[in-house]
Image (cartoon, rainbow, N blue to C red; front, side):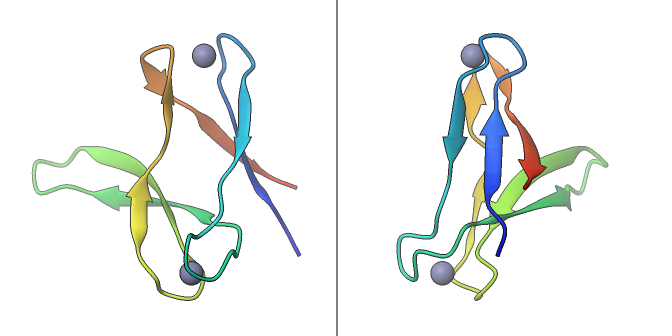
Amino acid sequence: MYMATYECPKCKMSANITCGKCNAPLKDASLKLDNGQKVQICECPNGHGKIKSPLCCGQDMSCSIS
Ligand SMILES: [Zn+2]
Ligand SMILES: [Zn+2]
């Protein structure tokens, strides 16, 4: 069992994010847009969907799996 813990590199705020439907910790993933830009997302390991990574202090929070 792992938890996806997001931490803001600036203020060190951290958050654990879980799926609203099955309560599973979301896993870190990335999505490539048509314009070539890469976006960090989190997705439910059971296929309930994806959300964009949380923002804090104007930047993407980084994810570490523990
Ligand atoms: Zn922050
Ligand atoms: Zn789910």
